[in-house]
Image 1 (spheres, rainbow, N blue to C red):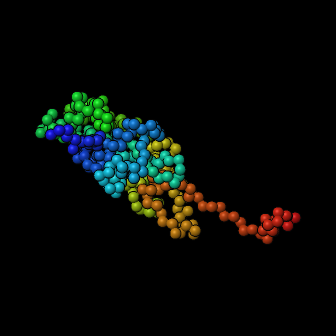
Image 2 (cartoon, helix red, strand yellow; image 1 turned 90 degrees about the horizontal axis):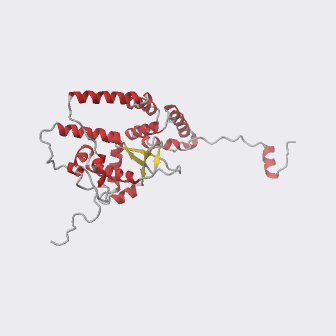
Image 3 (cartoon, rainbow, N blue to C red; image 1 turned 120 degrees about the vertical axis):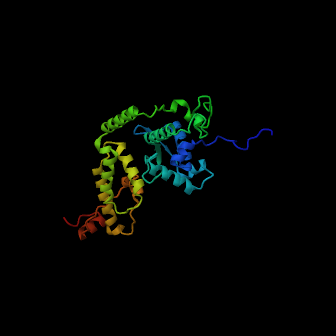
Length: 288
């Protein structure tokens, strides 16, 4: 049949079927691509590598989708907790999102898949779900990013036994004890709910909470009290008569760095007296 190149004539986008089953096909494709670019990124903020692109630029990497589909995939990954977004842009008006992967969340999903396979009597070494992509004889010389699935990135999970389950439970408890109390999921949720009850627009709550968690965990200086103060200033800004035409931002926008904008009200200048006016016109002092 000659030199057949109908199926793959360029570096392919790789995705594991098991991941697609767990989080969605489009989401799995996007997550793999973000992982690929993170491996090449030199953008480090707060101890993590980040990548950033406009939706239009992301769309160039997925030309078989519309931009709306690309946006939905990224939004879904944020809501599911696999992608964490932030705004490290120098210009305040630049709202381009920066992304990193929550690899701890991904590891939990991988653990669920592994336990499910171990408990499934029909699973085995002859699976056709793409797991053989981790075979050390496959893909290590590929230039398309698929070599990120090589064995050096694969965790070895033990058999699921009562003893191991007890050890895993103890490890999880220790992990919770190691985390500062005010950064645990439940405590952050309560903190966010207090702020959300004061926020003027009840839209985009799930994404807003994800942004709030990422912001709180980014720095010890990022506290509920600081954001409450910024929220108070924002509400005062909206309540000012000259801003009555403004519509409050969606929570998903304001909690994603919108609070960093300058929402302070301009200082009111006292009215000029007659002498002040004349002094300003002529440069002479009429009140001496």
